[in-house]
Amino acid sequence: YGLMIVIMEIDLKLKIQEFLASHNMKPYHFSQEAGISPSQLSRFLNDERGLNWETAKRIIEYIDALGVPAKDILK
Image 1 (cartoon, rainbow, N blue to C red):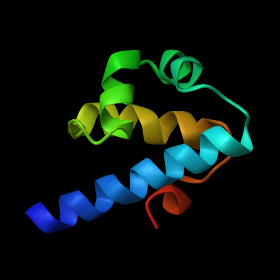
Image 2 (cartoon, one colour):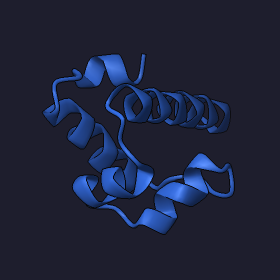
Image 3 (cartoon, rainbow, N blue to C red):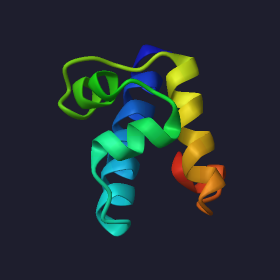
Image 4 (cartoon, rainbow, N blue to C red):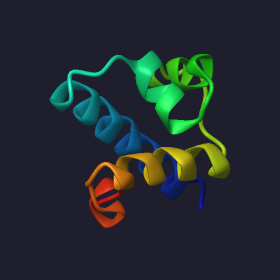
């Protein structure tokens, strides 16, 4: 399961970066809107730490609420 989680985190990181670029959004604003700590998102995007399930779920739900289907987030 460990490798699978790492692959999912890499994919989620790329999806967040794509989302930020396509929506011209700063990570700070994204984290505030998604209901997560800005420092937590920053550390994740800078490969300093992973995400727990609850944080990943909040990110996916936020992106999904903006019109990107959850099934397309972790493809």
